[in-house]
Image 1 (cartoon, one colour):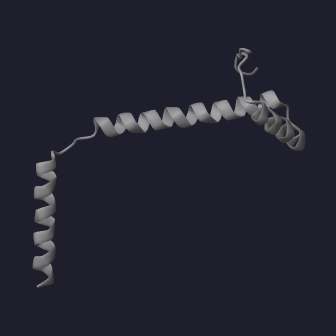
Image 2: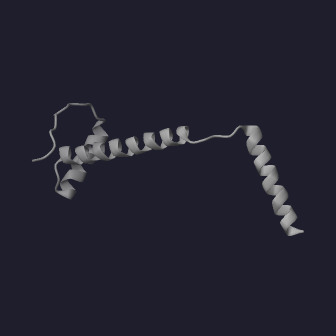
Image 3: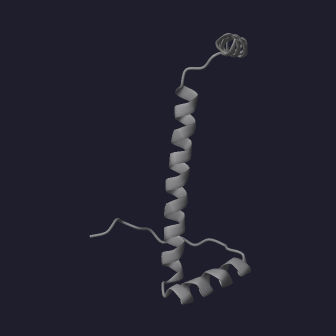
Length: 83
């Protein structure tokens, strides 16, 4: 048996509805199925996006001054290796 669902109503611009109806007709799928799939994909993308942001925020960081020192050391080693 499938996942429990709930019906909702919302407003959509008339042009977008016309596009969805044409898409539904050419794909031989109901409009509600296309919308459900679109919402599901958007929610999955947003969850992954938020998780990536949280992962980035939890990652160790260095100050601007520390980064400048790291880059200076990298440049120094690079130019030493070229001479």
